[in-house]
Image (cartoon, rainbow, N blue to C red; front, side, top):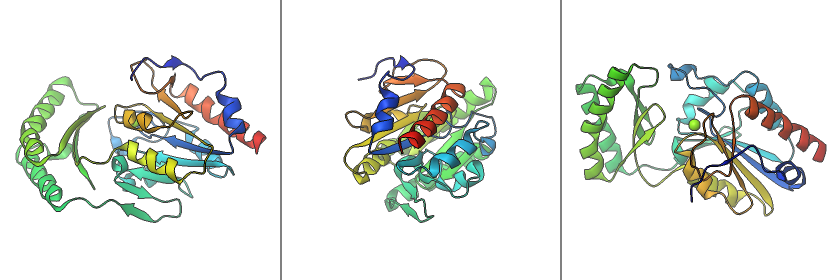
Length: 264
Ligand SMILES: [Mg+2]
């Protein structure tokens, strides 16, 4: 059930992290590690995040994973980390393992055709500059545009895609800054479930995210795991607590490093 998350972390959070035999730290990207900017290709992490992530990557008993709605291919130029952490992209449809192997859940052929038709309709309507084709979806972005242009894009996309979605069992998902036509069946919750299933018993799983698509991830956490909403303003969420970006997020990652280095 969604409620307003409490401000800040529960009192027993850091002792639990310190004593956990294994930790799974899952981080959303846009709006969590990186600010929203008009040009989404330039949504680089907040200052200081990159350095903290590289240090977190070498911790012995922390598995660090990025879980994003973006395509995996978007991430290396934004993160600029060597090595890269494990990345789940496209809301659970794609996965790049820490070693570099990429795995994709296969898209039904009918969905592939439908996404092509949705693309053609959007191009015909003259809105192709705002489109993004991802392996399992088609997105239209209007972040940073004025209200009139945003309203036009929203109107065209909803009109052109609503019938395709309805006739082909696809889903139209609003997100912060756009609309996405998605193949149903996978969400960030699947990423969380699979990662948890791979983790040894006793693992403490922690997920940080800001957007509506992160609610699936929060809902997939197990008993004792911790969902953290990263957001300036409170809102109802399945996360239990909230941190404000970027200061409280940076402090969170710094403390994670300190506690885990201390606890081994
Ligand atoms: Mg986000």
